[in-house]
Image (tube, rainbow, N blue to C red):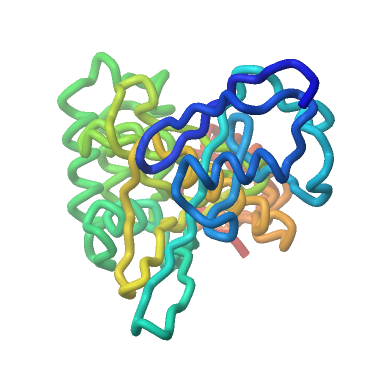
Length: 296
């Protein structure tokens, strides 16, 4: 085997494995066999992801070399294993846990319902919003120095009254407060941009939750397990779930399941004036102090 010797690493559930028997001229078949041997798996039981965020390594041409696939010395791969459940000695089925969107009602409290669902391991409580709104109002009121008019867009006391109203939508400020309260990283997966904004990223929390955002509405993202249970919290070191969350946004974007906030139609619920886009709504709020809007 010719070519430059490569030192490669593979992140697995059991830890990081080292591969040092391949060169730049080795092909993808050899890479897969090496990983299978080290991980103790058959080649059909796993997928290989590369780069960061990790993406599925295309193996359409198995005889292409590692160099042709831009695989360089020091490359770190991530192994995505598929679970095999054995029901009888002669019968087995394959099951792969699935990350998916859980739809919650569009009732102006979708953020609070989503976060509560994820923090309670999958309990849907449509009445949780009152307590969470009160929690946020109390947090803001206690720290009027940080939560000033420049941050809130209104006086501290006005904001507290506003967020207690069940028709008020939650957003960045509320997510930041909930992240600190629960001591968990909250990842907002934006459908339109397929970007993830991580609230609490700088706090080194050990766990994270994901919410999908379409421009005006939040839904929780959970993982369906083989026993019909759901997993809602994930390790902040789990890159695979992070990648899958982005994939959910990409699929939703292809289906155009997002709202264009620059051009969507709104109506002021105070004076009934029709408005177009977020900018007009902000200008109307500044001019009239009306802050309750509905989409139509």
